[in-house]
Length: 73
Length: 146
Image (cartoon, rainbow over all chains, first blue to last red; front, side):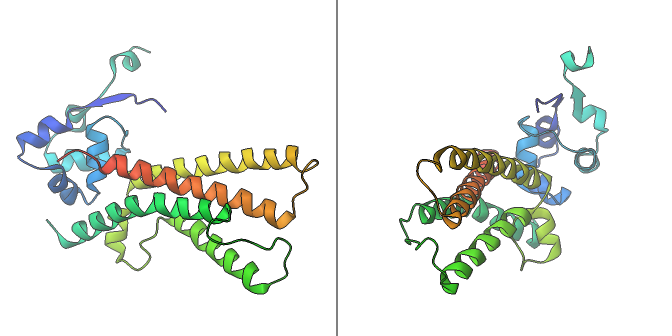
């Protein structure tokens, strides 16, 4: 299924001074999850998106956004 | 970083490495490279050893393993990306099973196959490709990053 969202996870993670592994450990998910979401390979569930937001201290909307073509449909 | 996370990461990376080899092992066994079956034999050893092996492989694929690890470690190692990869692998195995079934349908009037051999071909190719697919997807997810 093609991805419908883009994300700013890497930017906020690097601002927080965290490695992917450190972020994953705080979220209680695997580093693979952080890596694949960050690189746009995997579209996370609402639960994981909320975990990203909680750990990075940002609203979900700051981390994830609909792709422009999806938003215009 | 917490101990549970590190244990889960080690298990996850080990699983990504092992899965393709398990898949190849199943495919090689089916080819008779490692063991030659006596099709139609009523040997209980042959019947139940392969049956047990296939069931263990199937349950491994369906659950992701980590049976003896603590629940929290298992939850991290079996998170949604891992479950999604496993679903794709299972679908891949299903499609391969269907293709092999169709081939058996077409070929068997001309080259009769013992039912046991046909079942072995279908299950082995299906499980083998599913494991290879799972391992590759897990390895790709683990690759790169920091």
